[in-house]
Image (cartoon, rainbow, N blue to C red; front, side):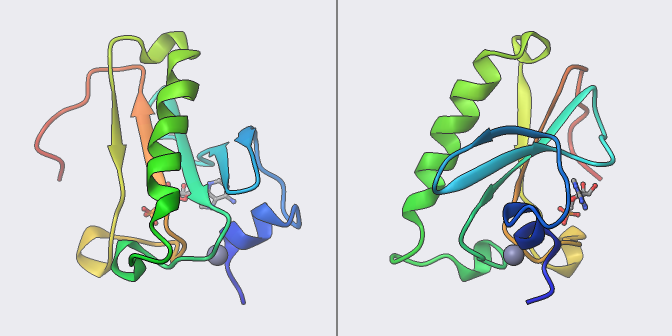
Length: 113
Ligand code: AMP
Ligand code: ZN
């Protein structure tokens, strides 16, 4: 499957990895939109939230637990951060492998564009 995030998981292309275990990978976004911007992905290829179901969604609680742990160790995130997942065309999802953006280190505007 021609998925760039699966290639990062298999170490076929490089990434700046912040955390890894058997279920998930956390790495810096190549084109950061904030002083801190990293991505959290399940190692299982799930295309988007639209493909989540009772059999594959346990990883989501693991992802959020690790976002909490990793964020607590990043000083720039102590005043808050935003977790975003884009799902589908109208949300401008470009990589069809489920990922959670974690953005922080500056005041983030709301609502998003
Ligand atoms: P989305 O638009 O929600 O699908 O976001 C995809 C994100 O993946 C964008 O923020 C890209 O900058 C990021 N991205 C794409 N390729 C890479 C890569 N090789 N390493 C790190 N981040 C990437
Ligand atoms: Zn993938």
